[in-house]
Length: 275
Image (cartoon, rainbow, N blue to C red; front, side, top):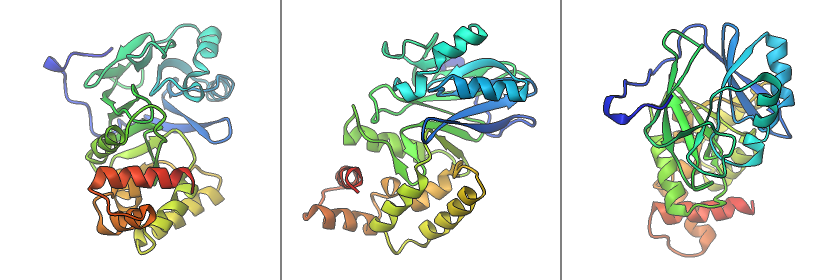
């Protein structure tokens, strides 16, 4: 359950032994992340019920909770089917009436403890990261970040509801987390995002190194994820808006001078929308 910030214990920085994270494919390019230990599992953003039910059966797992980052159907659409098939479990989601599936509303700074995955429960801090939607949240803890559609590897989500200052601030907040943090986002967009990053910053060798790793993972049938925040800081143009090469590329695309990182971000996002 969420705890008040006044007496909130620190969220662990490393994943306990025996807890693993596995992807469940959904739709064309969604990932539903399954946090599992022993015979229990929690899933993140289950847009579809059927692939989750199949994975639980195959692994002999019992569903003990659900995390939701935002209200879009491809992230919440499977909740009702899971609850119908398996019975009620805690469903943690943003404090937004559009997230009708949530049974526990979470806000910035809340501490969510997932029972049954390790002694004392697996704890995450809730981070409000508006931009893609106005009420988007991320879950951070145990060396992990479930970023939904706010931060992708080498990219970020479209601003369907938020503003460039909001989205830029949200990305800056995530980028400030420890560099070893593993990033689990909602979609397999990495290769396409790398193509855009190369157009923005062709002289960045770190992008080529990550591209080679991503290609190897995909060729072997694995997701490109997780990334790390260290990799994202080095390769993701939306986290590099203060870098002269990125700012220069954005200004050249705009055909005018840009006043600072937020304006650079806004131009990059508009460029990516039509790339």
